[in-house]
Image (cartoon, rainbow, N blue to C red; front, side, top):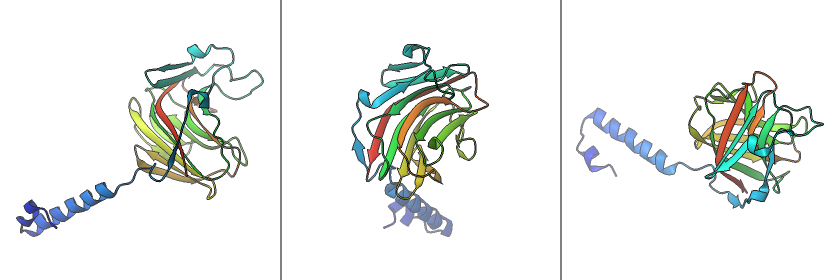
Length: 222
């Protein structure tokens, strides 16, 4: 049924406008959330394993205040352990819920201050070949799949919602930003898989200082 104000509009353009408004209203009502159909996986502080440069106190590269986890590093920092050749990081690794099958989802709200660039802020660790199935990196305010595809733009200095769905059995990863599907990609094959977030310096073109903040981190599965 047309709204009363639409019934009163007898012109062609008036009726066309009403039709457009009804379509938009229908799409809004029918819009689904990325977490629909998923079951929340309870997380406690024990499920967050923190990694930071091996020679730095944790408080010098990480804080947890008022529900916001802040991670920061410098480009010259050491790796997370003495025998590692990896780049600097300050990250939370979701532990206790590694997976190798099924459909899993990471959710969190991220904030990246301007100037932070050339850094992975969230990733799926584990793959048949290589170390990771997914890295979302910040470059000059834009989120990229590794250093390649642009996933979302203009994200400096604002909170944005990140949802990553990994359908292991179908080998597919879907990325949502602020509830909107932004990127779909084939994964890197089976492995011991888990989610991480924070800051992990990219192999090249990293800023001297890198920071990301996270809140309301959740894990879901089907």
